[in-house]
Length: 448
Image 1 (spheres, rainbow, N blue to C red):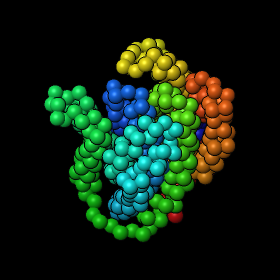
Image 2 (cartoon, rainbow, N blue to C red):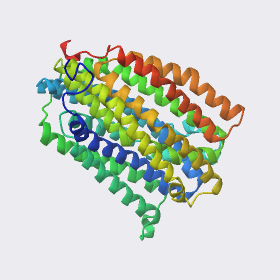
Image 3 (spheres, one colour):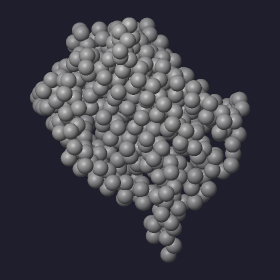
Image 4 (cartoon, rainbow, N blue to C red):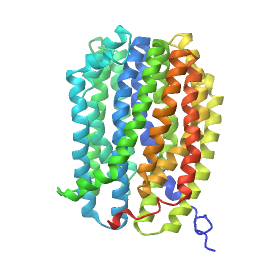
């Protein structure tokens, strides 16, 4: 019996995984840090400002995650075409991906510019929060288009073997965003301390800088030429429609959870607004392993190396959730240090933060398993409809009604309401494991 037939790789894939995963996780951490820097610095302006920025950030979150579904489809196709040496097809996918991004993001940017107030009024019963959210949404309306462009450029760059430069671009964007936020909130020049409008401007300019850097790097790396391939448009739609719908439904469910927190009260909304980017950062530590798995599995599948693909799947799903558990325990030990960083907010909000922080830490190994199972394994072979069915039923038919019931009807503490969402994640572990073991995802997507 060969090593791959026994479920073990012929040689450890850890080096290849880390070469992709570390830059990707760092870039994801940096990208999430952009949101965290905004919300953390805004915390000095009070609970209502925290709540407003948190609400609009969640609106963007829905579309960014949906775009992640689209770019995941692009990543799978680019990895397999690049692995089989078909570079012209990669060019076609790049330009087709940018067209799809414009189609998705331009309408949202226009809504933010011209209809932010009536939309913000639906998100919170608090008039002050609505007023601030309205202005912040209008000021940051270009942000989603810039983010979509940067996601496509970084995805193509990574899937063709370069994970370093997308990370560098994100680091520069984070540093510029932090510096500009400092100047407009606490800087030494009084005329520049313009508060929330400055925070919005810093968010837009830092993302624009990231797009510019990624363009320069991609042109040097890929030397793309304009290629009009109707087939590429159709392939992204075929590969990405279920992914995008799945991610949109999932992220819309998370946004619906946020609406429940909004109607629970401004303190609960402020606590979740502060914790949301931090939870994303916890998950981002391990998201690179999911992306690396998808790329490496995609390359194996593109070469019809099915035994190697199965062995790699077994490797990642046994080791990285365990690593997430160890990391989560370390984060729990640092709980008091974490809460101390928010001394500017009220003790009641700090208490809410501590309870939910502990829940998030304990949930990290579960979320890591599901992240790798979905992003890394099932999607690499195009088994997206199954994931869509699971997400649709678990979030919309089970978790969301229970969250609304426990938070709005029974009035349970915030940490217990958040725990309901963790139980839903835990139930999906068995479902994803069962599906992976059926090996339906072991297929070459380039043969068609």
